Image (cartoon, rainbow, N blue to C red; front, side, top):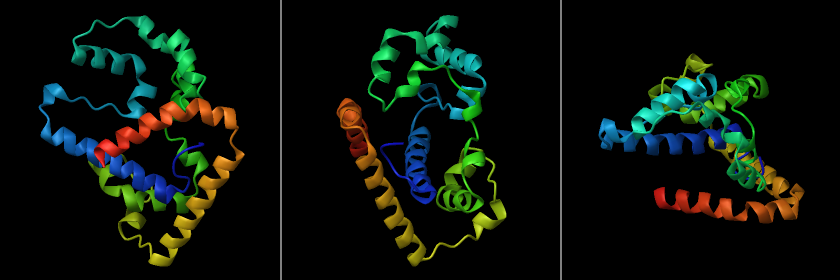
Length: 182
């Protein structure tokens, strides 16, 4: 990915912060005003999740809603690159993709910083016993910080300038949302 963190440690921290914001909002919100949908639910049971969402919103479900990727709006959004996958159907094979792409060490790092959210959201940890006592010392964190900075800088250097310009409005939107909840 062009933007965002690159190490599993930093991805875990960012994901955990976002999930904790959502969990706190859920605790402060009436059940009829909050719906939680996991990525896994959405990709593995798209139709039933969409029906549940429509019911929650008081909208009538229409099967063509699953064809969102064919819309003109999806095409316009995908051109920017940041959200290019909106022009493609949901892909159930993306669930648990990290198991194929991440090393055991990377998964442990993620679980060590995001364990509370993983547990609260009902995710099964891959290395529960190890992660519960998995210590990350200051030197390791400093090395991960440096690695993350280098990888982020490399992604920016390698990016197509035109693609960066197309992404700018969406990146600003994402930053404003993050700032609002910081």
